Structure formats: C-alpha cells, structure tokens
Image (tube, helix red, strand yellow):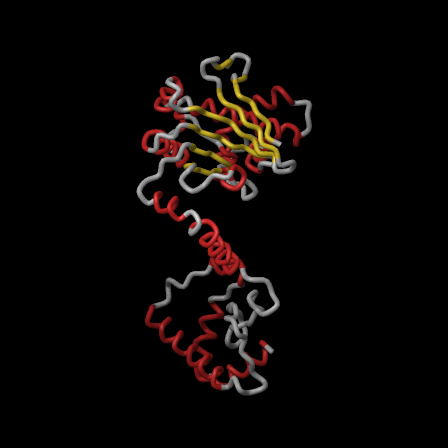
Length: 320
C-alpha cells in the first residue's frame, strides 16, 4: 500500500518531482541517522517553496481519500528520505490502533498521573517550593539509568540536590573545575545542605571501564573522566589482584566511593564544615541485583588512616 500511495502521488505531481529528486539524491539518509543530516545550506525561501509543494501533494491525497485504493492512516506516518522518485516511505506508526503507545505518549500519561496523584494531592508542598529550596541532602549518584536515587530512597521534590555523573566520582580540588564541584559549591555554600551522600552501585559500567583501561593514551571523554578513580583502581589491584575481574570491579565500586569521600575533604569549605559538624559525608552502595542498600558515614574525628590505605567509618548499616 505504501508503494501504491507513492505511485499515485508521483503521477499527480510529476511536474514537481524532478527538483525534489535532485535534492533527495544528495540528501539521502536513513531514519536511524537522521540527526547526522543537515539542511542548513538550503536557502529558507527554497525550503518554504518545496514545503508548499509537498503540502499540495498532501492536499491532493486528502481529496482522493474516498478512493478505495488510497487510505490515510488516522495518525501521522513517519517519513524518511530515499532514492525513489518522491523519496517518501511510509512506516507503521507506533500509535496505530492495537499497537503500543509511543514513548512520548507514555511519558505524557506518566506526567498526567504524577499531576493527579502527586502534584494535586500535595499541592501546598509544591507551591512552597516556588519560594525557595532547602534540601537537607546533596546526592552524587551514577548516571546509570538503572539507578534512580529518588525512586530508591523516596526523595520528594525539594529534599535532595542531585548531580549524576559517570561512576559517581568526585574529583579532588587539584583537578580543577568541573560540573561536579560546581554543584558541590552551590549545595554547600548557598543551599547549606547538611548531608553529602555519594551513591555507588553494582555492575557499574564506569568502574568496569576504569578497571579495564590500559595506559595507551586514550583521550575519550569517558576514559579521561574515570581516571579520577585511578587511586581506587590501584588500591583494588594491590589488595585483590588474585580475584576475578568481576570481583575486583565490585570491590572498586565501593573503594571509589571512599576515595570520593576523601576527595570531598580537599575542598576547604567542605572540610571546615565537616570539622564543625555542620556537614556530614556519607557513602551508599545500591545492589540492584539483590535490592540491598549499604550506608556508612565518614568518621572524621577518628582520623583517616592513609598509611594503611583505608578510611575510618561509622554508623554502618545494611538495608535489605
């Protein structure tokens, strides 16, 4: 049917197909690589004129909708450019009757459900947020899509100021500016959070990348970033070199959290508040394979035992 529609359209607008074909031959792209294509070099007037011609084709098809050979879908069809005469191919739309809702339709339903069951039911809470935010927590978590702190720990809007990055790393002050320490500065100095919680997790791809890296000068963004965890990697290799790769990764997932806790103290405005017990720094580890959560707090008064390669912690808990 899609071929028959294109054939009909071609016969109806044969006078306009040649210029469009010439362009589409040089503007060939597939649906999956559409974002790589650019039409910035086409004059706007040219694009408008071509769009008007395509609209005329659409109008002609609409007028012919009573014909048994041509049927129009109730929803918009996806189009892609190709080398055939009009360059238009019709794909089944995910919103066709009997098919799943497309992704944004699903997001719409989730939003409307949130508005009905959360926003409207807690209207006063959300109205209060427009005045200011006063979160008690600063949360640093991994960007991994399987780890959602608000879902895991039940944070309501306004309760936690969050930043997510690859492998939930905190670079030391000496490494210079980054979005992570900028967020830390805002959370500690401006919002005056009382708790900084770094959350790691099982099966972390960032840690796996760190543990498998070779010193070959690879300068990719990801590998450059995860080098912030090199000390944790080296400590893991020294202490657990006899273990399997997966076991070492699991150890490093926790070791990197502790190393990031120490890196927090390289920022004077955090160290000062920790000493005065105005801010407490915590580690957390979410094992989504078994749905358990480990939590511990850095024991600043107990001092940090750098010589033995470990930090002292307190208030260790396992939630399961």
